[in-house]
Length: 451
Image (cartoon, rainbow, N blue to C red; front, side, top):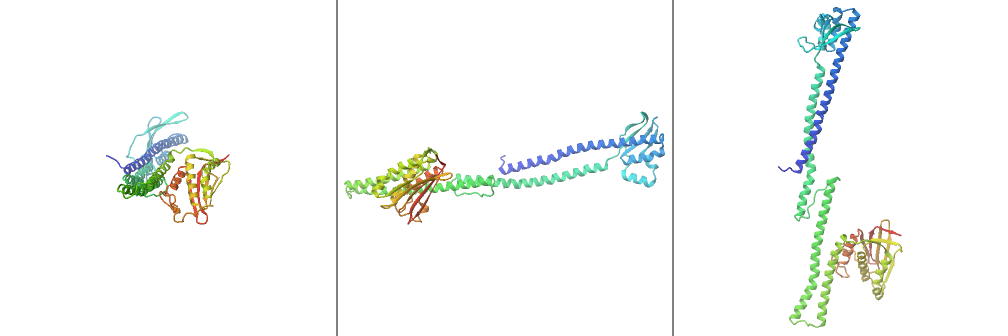
């Protein structure tokens, strides 16, 4: 029969509780064994004290004096030792029953009440020889009385142990049931939620409570589900936007070709140039989507190197000198000579070229584009700032989204590619813009140093 996770937890708690409670019986066994040994030793000590008392009485009285022995045997009886005394020839001298009978009535009652002695109850007697100065003067046969107090202690402790073990066992089972439910509930919820995620329900979430391992697992699962849902939405948005962007040039090309086939449009150079322009536009859209896909996958194949940043930036700036000169735009570079960076040179050039291209398109004649690089404690920053018209405040939160077009047009993929490539390097990119001061993009890349 298949056992659920909750059942396994419960069985585990019951097993642990059984082991813990059974240890009480094992411990009690050891205690009772030592206690029995202690009682045996203490009983032997009592008998030896009686032996010493009788030997001393014989020596003090120069023989066995029956009248003097009654008090001694009564005292022995109070120690829990019943005695039968014999002389050296083996003749009976006195026993505990006779000694009690010779006591005064009040003392007899006190002794009997204190010891619970009943002469009719007989048991095995053990002989002990009596000596005085190396000569045997007689012997006694001793029988230990029932140990009432000790037996009561054993029975009472057994009763307490059984009651406590029963109560603790019941409490442990109840606690195991509650704990197994509490432990299994979030795991079972994760199992159900993961099944929903596998079935395509990306909106499923689990309850995250606490900061233990299960709580962190629940938080990680929710984060994973959120990212999957966001990626699925981005994928659908990308497909929708790409289809929309591709539909326009395809519709224009199809319409013009139909017009030419029907003889409604001329097939001269101007018409062919229009078709060529739309084909180039179509190619640019596909290239942009392909570049974005490669940027998203660049985390897996980055070829990072450590290189000096200033000559690298100078070579990129040199590519834009002619276009800036024609546009009368000033292009500035400010970078420490010794600044080094760890990055993929090809991917980093894509980032910088895209940002510089956007800045040059944004500035008017006579404007300025500045590239500033520097270092902080654990990152390199690259800032591309222009004095252009700026980005409207409503557009700022969306500039890195796919196919989001500002007022300057374009495909809306350049900044998305920048964002993905920077993220692949473990960095971040931010934007600040205003109509008065222009736009500034700031790229942060981790791990840098100066030589």
